[in-house]
Each structure stands twice: as structure tokens, then as C-alpha cells.
Image 1: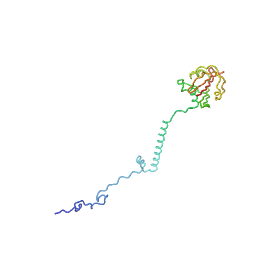
Image 2: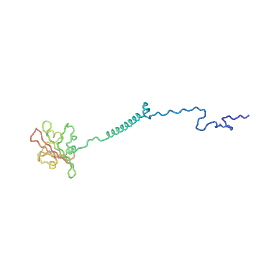
Image 3: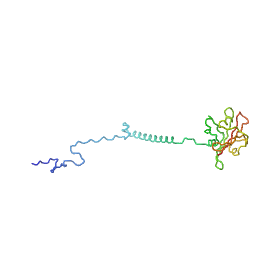
Image 4: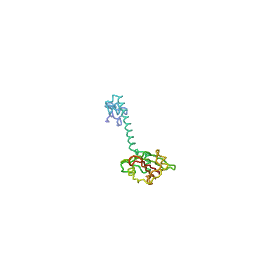
Length: 217
């Protein structure tokens, strides 16, 4: 006796799919899967501060404040990079150029402790493009500031015989320079030739005087 096919089997023995619902739907009687929890309102700010989820205005304000802080942090970091990479060398002035040209810059005489600053300085170029520096030091005299200390500071020799000051030196400096003053032997400065004249003060403390320097290079 041939057994009847069951309700779930087709007459040919294959599984009968007519008892299932449409594809993609759970069979009848299958337990329903509960939907996942809805995302909490407020986004990342609400996740970080749950108390702000129900306060949208305050939440937006906090978000804007955080964005501003982020931009400020980026700007500060960029400024720090620029500050660390930029050249901090002070720009060279006419004073330092003239001093270097004459060999009287402080960096050219290390270890002296103190140096003299000219009362008048002119740095220019001659007609042929050469550099020219003119300096005038006024020494008040006394125990500390005097002609001998000036010569010792810059390792200069004693003045020799009087000589006439060059015309371009007299013209460049704004003061009333003497026509003639004892001169030091001609010597080379850092980058060129220099002439130094020392005019002792007629009246005043011992060691007072004026030093005139002409340097070209």
C-alpha cells in the first residue's frame, strides 16, 4: 500500500513550498523580532553629555563652542610651528654695518665686557658701489671712558702724527670736525680699509677726546 504524501510534501516526494508565505516574510506563527532601539537625540554632543539631549538650544551652543575651540587650537598650533621655524636673527642696521666695515663691532672683539657706541654714524655707498662707513665717538674722559680705554678695547695702536681728515668724512658727519687730528697707522678693518683719527679735547677731564673713523670696502 502506497503511503500518502504528507501536507508538506509534493506528490513526487519533494518538499511542498506552498505552505510558506511569500519570500522574504517570516512564516506564519514565527516569533516577531523586536526593532532595535532608536538613536538617542543630540548626536555626538548628546552622547557625551546625556543631560543635553532634551535641551537642543544649549546643545547647539555647546557644539558651536567646541567648533570654535577646535579652530582656535589649530590656529595656535600653526602659530607655534611658524614661531619655531622662523629666523630670529635681528636685522642688520647701518650702525652694525659701519662697525663691521671698520672692524669695531662687538662680535669682532669678544671678551671685552663693554664696548663704545658711536654718537654719529653714516653708512653709504660710493660712486663705484663700494660700501663706506663714517663713525664719530665722543669720549667724555675720566677713569672709565677715555681715549686709552677706547684704544685698549679695540686693540688699536697709539695715535701718530697729525694728518688731515678726509673730505668725505668731514662732509658725511653732521658735526664740526677738526681739519687735522693725530691719526693711527692705516689698517684694514673687517671688510676694507679704515682710517682712524683721535682728537684730544682741549678742555675737560683727562682722556677726553673725539675719535673719527672712515672705513671703505
